[in-house]
Length: 252
Length: 235
Image (cartoon, rainbow over all chains, first blue to last red; front, top):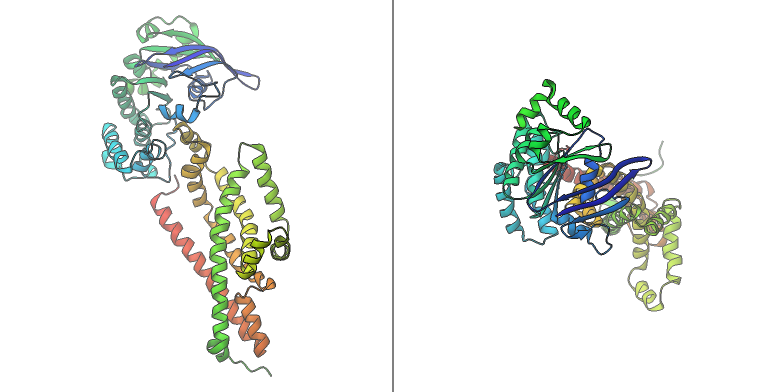
């Protein structure tokens, strides 16, 4: 579903992505982790072309992002994206946040779109909030609405860019459990996260990035038990010190 | 010791009152259609000004420079005395039979005001976090559709106070249309003065009506604003 080959990206002199090669197959959950500044958020943003790349090939759902014939709007409609800061539309109710894209892009009739939205809201546990505005919701609730909004387009792939990093610890669990359900339903997912509990439980594979390169790629059991690189070991140790323990246990 | 005798009765009833009322109607038409059209044109120019396509940006920039940096009166004269030389004869004849003064004044007011509105809306758009555009684009909306459904509705809401100012300016500037013979409120007040020499009464009446018009516009926009803000407090 997702294929990156020899991807390079520079921000001026900074080599933010250095020869990235990866593949995500249908129904797979790939977790990308690494210290901040390692390029993981940039990487996931290249998958739906929010960030352009300088070199290499990215093929998503059979469409080459660099190909002039690829309709990028059409491709983005097939790829759900969940942001760290939720980015709900503040001027629209929860219902309209979810139904806007299906109604305007897919031309789904309003009634049908709203029925589907109610199902999605029930799925993320927020059916009673359909008439609320984003400013009236907690961070965790906003992020669950954002997930429902992305799902409303019936995407073939879901991308998550640090979906719980902006949340208070007690809200992380509710978002992760929605994501876990989604993974169980067979959704193809690529998730940038520090939640190692989620990675261990849900991921099929874990990628560890540092300084723009993929240092390690392994199934979670292997990655957590026997990390190959010093940088990965350091990273895991830091996450597992008591100071950070709260968020990792909440995830598990 | 005043030698002037106030006589309010002449402007409160009879022919002169009717003149003022007919002037007010023209002023209302000119202001209302000017506000609507300049808002729409301002939106278009604002979006063009922020386009990714350089020539589109240049056209918008040129438009803004020319319209903001020339006097409105000159623009009114341009549309009234200048523009018809460029139009085909048939259209000219038709316009001359259909209140060309009004059309020329409306065009000048609309174009002039739209430049200021465009800049206000643009600064509103710039204050919307760029993540909103990313969210819209990542959902599959094109740039223009993102603007239409997500960015502009938010930008216009926070631009309302400066927009009210532009609307008020337009309503007040509509008095300049008298110079090309549009029979609006100021024109009629001048007429009343010419016929009666009651300049104080005539222009006091005009002043009160313009004041009332401004208060009404401010009130209407405030009502709209409050209704909208109640729904979504700025988050």
